[in-house]
Image 1 (tube, rainbow, N blue to C red):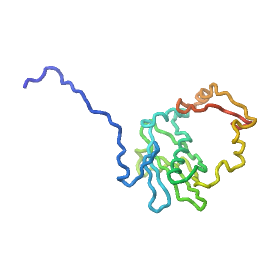
Image 2: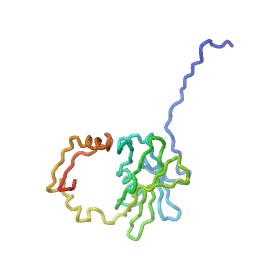
Image 3: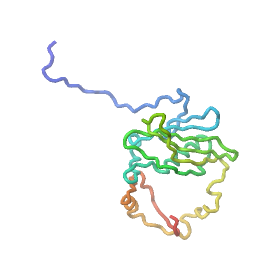
Image 4: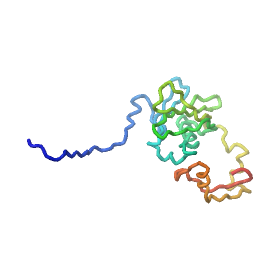
Length: 213
């Protein structure tokens, strides 16, 4: 057959479909409802639980709006959210305490693997919790980095409402506090190198009493 004298024109009609996570139950894992934690696993010895996930700017681009001196940091409330999600999964009621040990820095390229480890409860029903990360492309010889450590408590454990130092917060605003203007609040932070994009500009009011805001 005679061939056309012009260059071949090719058109692609393949559809871009979202990446499928597959059936985690088929490999013995539980599905997590949290956007950052894809799977959960109760350890065979009954001594704890493991939660795994993945973070990247490609999949969570809004995190780029939280940066310090040009470096994207996962906010501390994000680590608290991970601990609280783990607490609810294991039947604990609250995060009793959480200490931030190292910033969780998101790379410009690539992804981080996440692990949240919850240990068995003690006699008082308190469970240790820890948050770790490691670059996705890292070899097995690269150690995981711990970012937070804390404690979960089950129902019936003492909470903030049971402590006298929180009693004055029952009235809001606190008696004797003065409202602080928010005009230029985020601009001042940006001038100091701390950038909060629209996704992180949720402050609606600020009050000060003495040296406490």
